[in-house]
Image (cartoon, rainbow, N blue to C red; front, top):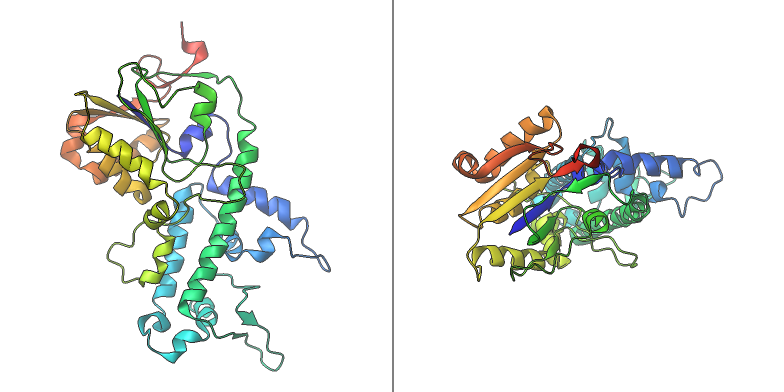
Length: 350
């Protein structure tokens, strides 16, 4: 069975502007034109969302979604080091948390924060009394609003897909499962692969490990940070971890089914993993480690688009599965190579 593992680079090579910076630039241009003196800001995303303002204030911001994820993590670490989170029994836990967080060199933008109120007799802002739970819930709800805006953006962006594709997607067989770290169904739209059927009788599936965009009002997309490792971060912040969100939104279950199929197959077969457009960065290490080591007999093809990406992927895959497994299983292949690649330009096919 072939397992196709996709990251954001797969969308990028098909012409979609799905970088973290693309999204921020789009909304900065969209909403800043409506900001002015006397203008109603009640429906303005950038005026009302503390995360959006914070990300835009970080200059220069990175191109990759891992840059956003790392920034979420940095803010959480900063907040968690405040004395009010360390001494939970203190009355001070219930007042001025946000104000002190803003002062404590977090760079976090708390303008229009619902727990602030202006005090006309004081220069400094004061803060309504608020519990840790309510404060963290507010921050998470704001991140959810940010994610909903991203979903709307992706829905519009995917309408620009050039169909048919200028590439041929070359795989070994019709027995293919998909592990998609993107929110988009670019592969299914352009290449019409049936991920629920194969001629050999093996059960295949399409797994969207971080959720999939749709036109529903609900937003179940996973957007957060990696596990906290050995950091002493209060458990109330766990809601920001992608690991917890996958369980919260039910995106982990199909992944678990695919993992079990690989570990305990009804038929004996060699699995070939095809990793396309995924940087193999740290926020997805746990899931990648589980899936890539699920079968002893397997081949791992990692496709790269330039030498810089190759060097980064070589370092990252060593961290995920170890050098011995890399030596035994991994092959690095230029993704557009006519003989060995996976996305072959149609003009290169004779």
